[in-house]
Amino acid sequence: MNKYERFIQQETKQLLKPDENIEALGFIYNKSLLSMIMFGVISFIGNGYFFAVATKNQLILIETEMGFFTLKTVNKRTLQIPYDQIKRIKVGGMLHQKTIEVSSKTGETIKFRLNTLARVVPGQKQFIRALQGLYEQAADRTM
Image 1 (cartoon, rainbow, N blue to C red):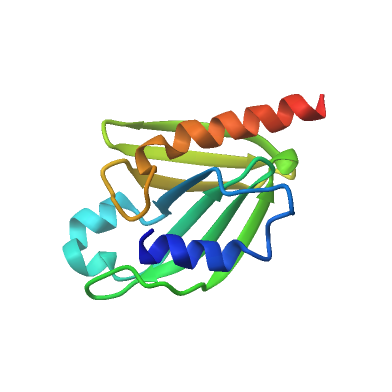
Image 2 (image 1 turned 30 degrees about the vertical axis):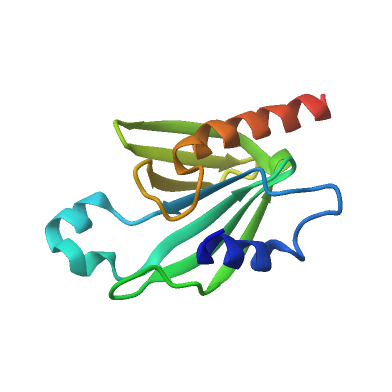
């Protein structure tokens, strides 16, 4: 278990129900690819990074930040999104650059990017498929 996994477990411990476990982890971001291209390495520093946690009931996003040399283990804020509040999860992108768009039933939409080559947390490559599957299973339980 790496330092990011330990951090995620610590931060989600109080958020999970007794019968709920972490099913999938992802490292996602909402920074613009254009700014990353235009400004290079300097654009990677700062906000816009999230640890994404998928459980059988919810998506948990832990906002963190990038330092000069590495990703920090700091919780700037936590967002819990129960699957029953999600209208749809739309996935796009190509090759190893994927996009995730989560639309809530209240009309809000949040967009993220996921690089399947990132090795911050295990399961990065499978995160999107796992999230979609867990969301669909939760929808089936409520019907």
